[in-house]
Image (cartoon, rainbow, N blue to C red; front, side, top):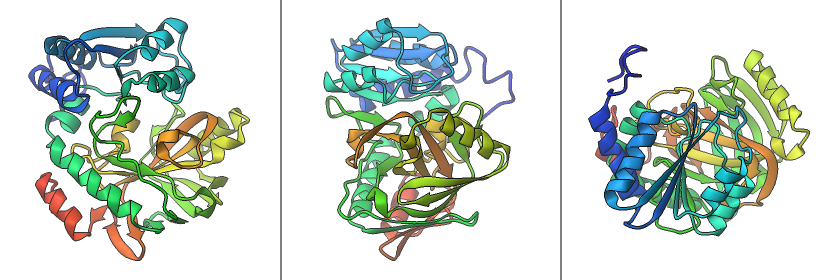
Length: 354
């Protein structure tokens, strides 16, 4: 249940539920063990109730939690000051809650090279923690993700459509798919909140139109969309941006970097966390709206197993109710899963309408 503004921000709101979800995150998802070092990064825009609950859970397990708070920078994917960069580069587990996260930075890359198990939970508050982790059957969610990973990976032609004008076609040609919402079983491997699989078809085969209707972040001025942003894509690159004021903000933000790689489509991500039913403006949550698809532009990390390149930043946009057709077979129609096995998973997860 969500209460009016002013109630959910009280210190004790969902405190028991948050403690339960925090333990689930630390013990069952990040697989933290006694004696491990756990660095938790947060800025002044983070929900401290979540940060403290996660640090407490790590301590109860017998790990060594270290919480780093720092001022909000208002620039995502920017290298932090040296004390933070050094700390995250030399830890066993790194859990990031900073609203303006520092993924894709040099210290992020060093952390992975040194074997850190990392997750990005930017913008997570107690409602998000409770709904997307605490209330979710995580084992079933991970199993669904494994199924979708293989389903997409075994497909070649990827057609994405929606009722707002999206019509994008691409070809995988054997490209691998990353289950980004799995548990942290591998050293030096970033995972994300459960309910997402990600990949990039062969970049030069991506052509058509995208119509973001739910969320786009960064830039910080957007987040939850109030109007559609239309992108024309040719050979995997943005060639035209249409829409209203938010489209202009986005276009100006992209051009401010003077970096052609910011216009390159970096990944597709299918979202399926049953705890997310609508856009909130928190991108890690928004890109997991159940039944959505999200597209990233800018930096493409090596874990996506695509062409891999650096860019000045990265941004993600969300389409809430896509139709996804793989090799002529319909996986989703207007955000509703149609594939028989997927429907079984939806029922097991308790998703309304299945």
